[in-house]
Amino acid sequence: MLDLEEPLNTPRLLLRPFRTADADALFDLRSRPEVLRHLYWPPATLDGVRDVVRQRLTMTRLAVDGDCLVLAAEERATGRLVGEVDLSLVSAEHRHGEIGVILHPDAQGRGYAAEAATALLDLAFDRMGLHRVTAGTNAGNEASARALRRLGLRQEGHLRQCVRFDGAWHDELIFAILADEWRARR
Ligand SMILES: CC(C)(COP(=O)(O)OP(=O)(O)OC[C@H]1O[C@@H](n2cnc3c(N)ncnc32)[C@H](O)[C@@H]1OP(=O)(O)O)[C@@H](O)C(=O)NCCC(=O)NCCS
Picture 1 (tube, rainbow, N blue to C red):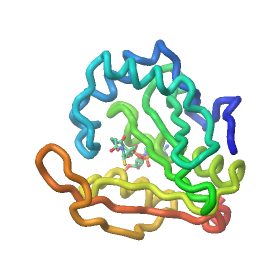
Picture 2: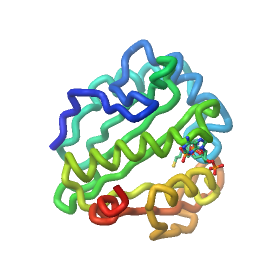
Picture 3: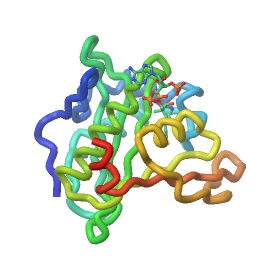
């Protein structure tokens, strides 16, 4: 069980719970075609994003299967919200979690995803005692696959046409890393 009381610090980011005031920045992030290109979401509306933020105000706890910790990624130097990151508890019994990272285009290509994911993996393995962490990504999402491989996750699956979105079938890649493998890299 994890109840996040303190934000997570990385060298350049603060990963902290969402606040009501984050709605505009999250709307900006979620309405960009280049961000949504490999996600299965329609472009956001401001009201929709306000609802999302409302739900997230309390998404800081991982206790039962399906719980999701969602944090805003704030650039420490500027205080600007540059992304959103999450860690879900897939199965407490099998000690399995899943991570995800979404960055604003201005914040990509700087190693921020690696920093944020490192903090999530430390949390998953060191503080929660998880055994295995996975990440799923659209098969065409090369930046995501590259980032995951660089972190040491291995591709374990290629699920053919497993998602139906926007009138088309999409393939998903599944990446994973085990606790021992993560510790060996740290
Ligand atoms: C997937 C995503 C988070 C990856 O972000 P990213 O910034 O490319 O990933 P990283 O943090 O690993 O950054 C690595 C890149 O930054 C560069 N970089 C620059 N400065 C760096 C630094 N100080 N440290 C590390 N890398 C640095 C690296 O060379 C690398 O570039 P390359 O990929 O062209 O080789 C991003 O593309 C994204 O948000 N996409 C839209 C949403 C999405 O699809 N999310 C994934 C859902 S599954």
